[in-house]
Image (tube, rainbow, N blue to C red):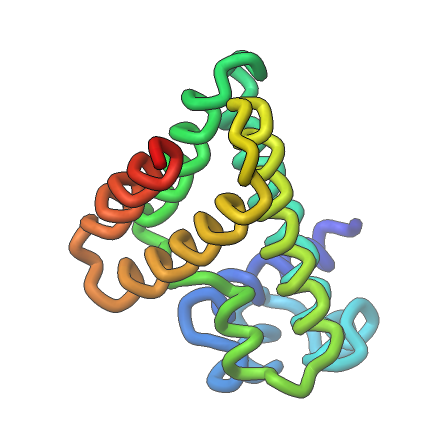
Length: 183
């Protein structure tokens, strides 16, 4: 990926993340990424194409970040790995650039965009898969159902933290998770 293409992509991710997809136009992305209109269209022939590429990149960045945060934790220590996933979300929620989930926003703002919908679904399915793997390593028989429920709790925590910014979501969700794995 060229430097200009990366500049455009990362500026678009930043703007879409903070302001949403509908309210950010191509002209703003071009101006803030400091590229010519021709350069923009050379790499991104449409806003839909740009959104698709942003979601793909965001998905990859999140996956890499979560997995990197889990690297120091032994795969045999499932409970600590589970806690590590929730700690990652807590860390994300407390960053200045936390503005909610770009995948949830895409489903909300672009309900008929098949590409963004599919990428968003794949991202959420990956989260469930990661949780399943960790829960299975803990010997929990109902790991599939628990993973799905935990992902739903995380999505709710994302929305709560975006709305209230009170740093309560993860601790509340973690308390529920502890109850779920004890049951």
